[in-house]
Length: 298
Image 1: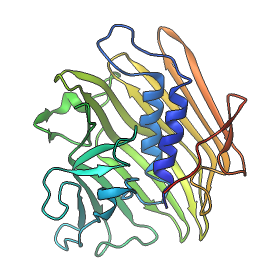
Image 2: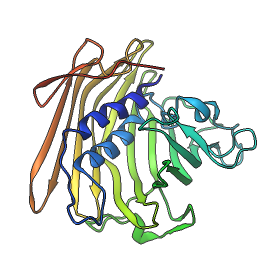
Image 3: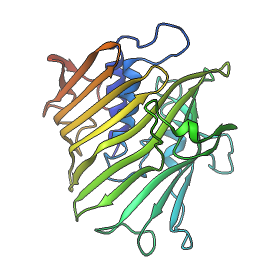
């Protein structure tokens, strides 16, 4: 399914309705950037598998997870390895707003016998030297542990949010039943490096309550859950609550449910965006205002 990509397109629509967080010029983050980070994290759950990256077009979609390593119970998806290409792979359609080149790898670690997902077992998703680059040269580093990303050293301080909590470990999907899943995010970080080499926004992502979902033949539903994103540079927090967000096989957008995101800080009034989805594909209300989303595409 292609829901992740279009959920990001939905967030780009929200960008136009948000004001800037920072006015100093030292950062490039907006309220919408926080919401995008939280939705990227939640969007990884849409196919009930933390392996799915939402990379559904052009080069990246032809890169799959490798075979199970029986010794470590891991499977790895190398985004920089396509027919011997070490220059990354393309995410999105070339020239589009979402287009970027992806590097590095995502790793799945299984807790069962062999790399299988059965009831009662878990799959942990972590990142290795994972980042994406836009044509402007702007990069977004994403990491879940200490190490190096695009030659940038990641230490404990880089895993510590502005409230002093160390958050790491990626995301864990628990198989709770034949059609039910639970996704917990213990710590994912997104950090911008501008083309000039300066740092932009730095977001820490985690769940304060797991994203609970059901997966059936034609639909998937994010029944509940709360994703938190902290903007460490300006000490702001976005909290996204998911309620009954349902996807069908005939629409790239939710056809039911509510997504509510509130951005808070110590020195500003809260900003809240509430999206309510309609059974009509692409129809929704945003803070009570009827909105039609772009037509679904490939």
